[in-house]
Image (cartoon, rainbow, N blue to C red):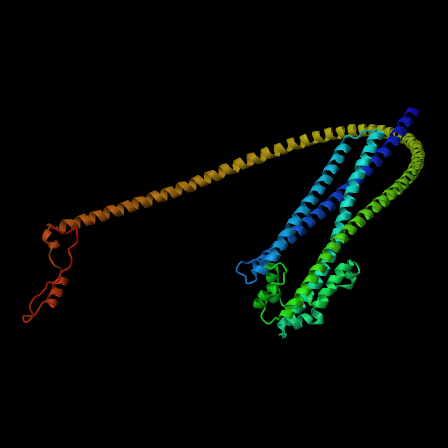
Length: 502
């Protein structure tokens, strides 16, 4: 009994632990599968959206190229500048794309190398430190890439807002032109047509850029208050003479309606425009360098703060691990106590089960004895019943034999009656047949006597076949021609094929 209790306790101790391990592993696998499905769905949605945007971009570029870069267009010279600018920006985008792909491939290779290291795990501190260093390197690279892309996108959003503001101004100009403004100069001098600088953007731009924009607003935009045609002709002549004063006389030939004072004033404006534009370019360059330095400083500060946060997180994780370990030990002790109680209860239950099985065995023994006694009684009753059935069967056979003999006797009497009746019918049929034969003989005798009295001799006459019938002779008499009418044709029927040649 003691050995049995020990074995039961050992089995009870092992079973809950296996159940808990298997349930935990199943739950973790289910969570991991769910995460993988969610990530896969996100990837598919992102790829679908990217393909749709790519198709839209291709259609827009196709329409744009058809309108702007058509060689038969009247504004081919002006649009060539846009074409060169687009080519430059396309090359820049391709270069940036290649750099991003190189960085992504590098990060991907680092992740694959980390996964390869995780396949052959070694329980050594050096290996753990190496894995930790690789993970930090991959994580830092990914975070730096995300931060850089975020700043680039913010800068692009600012530029997009500026471009939207400028486009709204140009749209307003076009609307005013469509309304039939008197001259282009008046349109350019309208307050709504000036190149407005958004105050929210102005606060973030360098002073030279703001000064350049204000100069444009004050002097009438990118063309100094002139229309596009006059300004382009001015630039053509000014570029040809490289800014020397000798260009004024030639410019007067191209610029109808402009005086020499207007051209000199426009020349002063253009000189100031070039100086301010150059300052703007240098200022933007310095501003970009400053922004890049600030970006690098922010990135370093962020990396430092992230490192501190990671250290704090590791400390919290260590404290949580200790707390979890204490909780696990407490639960383990409670489980051990529960296992002992369960083993004792199981041993007591088995003892009661054995007692119940012994009582059940005794009851089954008594039931088997009772069944044996009933079986003997049943066999005796079956034997008596079988003998009784045999006696009844013999009596039944005797009765059937007697009935059979009686039926044979009755059948013999009936057969004799039927034979007499058939014999009588046969005699009647014979007499009827004899009477009919006698009548037939009498009839033949009468016919023979009549033939003797009347003898008929008929000879064969072949000409009867060709002679016309009485009806035809009468018909011919009716159809015969008179003496006054000449006989043109004798009607006759067609000769059948079997009579032709006879």
